[in-house]
Image (cartoon, rainbow, N blue to C red; front, side, top):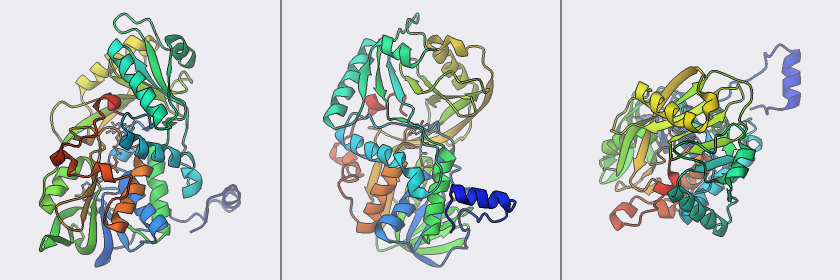
Length: 415
Ligand SMILES: Cc1cc2nc3c(=O)[nH]c(=O)nc-3n(C[C@H](O)[C@H](O)[C@H](O)COP(=O)(O)OP(=O)(O)OC[C@H]3O[C@@H](n4cnc5c(N)ncnc54)[C@H](O)[C@@H]3O)c2cc1C
């Protein structure tokens, strides 16, 4: 596959853009693969990419019931940060953040990583204490993040109202090297990289059953017929429980819709990401000028991938307390994705009760930032058949053993 470069753009400009190749192949599925990955979201595609790149395993298929990146990967608000509380989380999220830094070069695909800084506001004494604790934990873990005063918050975010009536800003946890990336490009870049290395990405191919023999996986049933495999990776975010049921085990996961919206485009007013967890909303400004606004998740389990009125009302009401400047903006569109929540708000990466079936799930409302690190760890798990250091703490049996990795405070609004 030809490399993208300034020279290639100039060459194609001269020949009316007739020489661009398709970014990834669309093959028919083979009868059998060494590894089948279900789900062509960022996590599934990154897993396939690192399997091929880091471990030389290329007899791999990624099966996707819709179109690649059409799940949560293409529906999130793209916040990237690594200032999580627990050491296990900090390790995988920091690896991820650092991989994002030169992912465009690695993939030869511009993922538009923008390390513009992430501010997590403290608007109650409790939150202030929690962020201070996180800042200390981060320092011990070697992660760059620090507490800032209300005056420094105002300097970084001029449009903020720090002396709000209900919840004045008492400080903030600032990660200058956090930021955003273009979500579709992350999926497309990994897909191109994986396909280039021989991975088959098969879209419009729904997995409808998992074949087993003697407690071991032998293949999957799909809308394009049966496909045999030696190892099966379930990487389907909000549908994890459904796939687990097909494979014959249960997961401690709840699926529910999480929503977001964007405003009409306006001139640049905000050059970092701000999360206001107490009032429950967060925003950043896209390159097009829209304010990208994240809301909450539904309070009940469901599989609807759409928005609802009461979330818009709640989210916008919350945010205009702290950002009165946005009160007269028009909303352009809203949407929802299905997120998979665990009790300790940490992911599951590991073996399952079925031999040969591995799971990567439970990233909940904050897994976009984790795509490179998660793919890296999942590829190690599939290659070795057992987790290495990065994934080991996130095994499924931690729920039976009571070995929780509690990120419910650090996750807060949860991105
Ligand atoms: C509104 C919203 C905002 C968010 N904001 C952030 C944020 O700012 N920062 C952050 O870090 N995270 C955020 N997240 C979370 C993040 O988007 C997810 O954690 C992450 O994208 C999960 O990626 P994935 O690859 O696991 O899942 P997905 O991208 O959902 O991919 C799973 C794929 O599996 C496919 N699939 C399902 N069932 C089957 C089947 N039977 N057969 C074949 N294929 C199947 C689906 O079609 C889907 O494409 C947000 C999520 C939402 C919804």
